[in-house]
Length: 118
Image 1 (cartoon, rainbow, N blue to C red):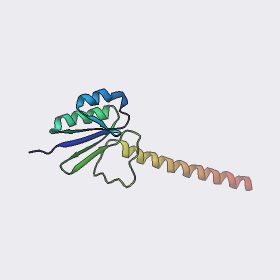
Image 2: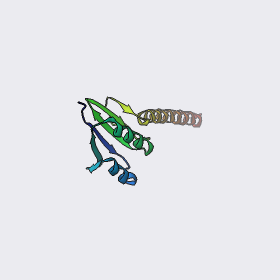
Image 3: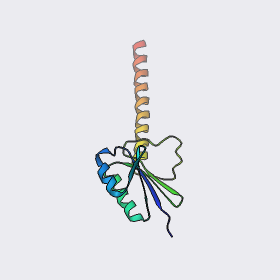
Image 4: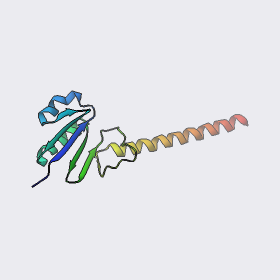
C-alpha cells in the first residue's frame, strides 16, 4: 500500500486561491496544505506551481522535494534533500554577480583614489 503524499504550497497564492481550493488544498497558517493518495494530482499541482511561480514542499516516503519560486533565496543551512526549480541556481548567479560588481567598484575606487594623489 502506498503512503500518502503531503504537499504544502506557499508564496503569492492569493490570485490563484480558488484554483488551489479546487485541487483540494486547505489554507492553514500561511500555506495551502493537502494530502493525496496518488501521484497523479501531485503532478498536476507541480505543473500548476511552476506555471504560477509558487513554492511547494512535497513529502512522501521519507523524501522531501522543495521548489523555490523564481528570484527567491534558499534559507541558510537548509536541510532540504532536493531543490527543484531555478530558485537556487538563480540565487547563486545573483550572488556571484553582486560580488563581482563589488570587486569592480572597489578597483575603480582604488584607481581613482591613486590618480587624485599623484
